[in-house]
Length: 326
Image 1: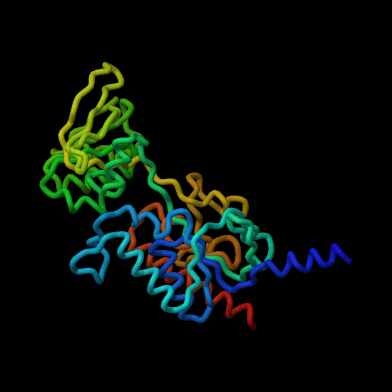
Image 2: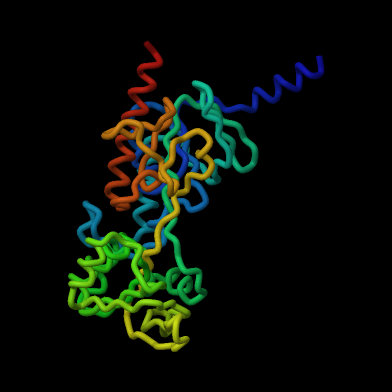
């Protein structure tokens, strides 16, 4: 009798819902807006970084509807307010464990709260990899010249000199993009060769205002305390240190998708990005589980594309719920 009573209490603590959104940012908030307007009564757990990567971006000037630009944190607060306006239940905290083995998807929060849901929208994003230098993190926090997105922030360095770290296709692509805006781009390659494809390397080498320094490693980002003024670099072959003047320091050494807790159930590619089960949709390999934003997007990684996939995920989830009723 006692066991039955304990089980009843335990079951009563399980929350049963229609739609759970894991993660925030432009993808999560847009999904929440659409899901709430469709009367799906979504619950969102914002994650470790409420608002996502954009909260570390001082100025956003390429998102439609903001003619004067907007700060990343301000934009995320506005998206959150819009989601709440349609009665999305936005919660701080994060999901630490999932079980997608059955038709009802089970998820647990960091404090052990258990949620059973018909649909899940994953919008956990991806985290840019940084070098981990104290000086790099200092200027990253201040928004004073360190960035991991040339397309997002390159505009602010027009007619200036910048440094970019990286040796892969993304680094080459971003260096080429910066070369159209900046007077000079210095590219630091840690080894004596690129990891990028031949065509990307050739494009960089043919660009006259890109200087490539091989065997080069950043040891410090220099600045006046507020803004970046240069970087100190060591040549790994000669141990010779040099200082390169610049106003912008771009890190292009990859992103890490925040998908670790899903890997047992969701198909991921070799770097951890969620695979779409059906191109042109937000569907994953698990029915009722959808993905939006940078957790699946390793190509564009923009706020506007993340928001678009958030819309898709909510619409796909709504259709899935409708199919369950028939």
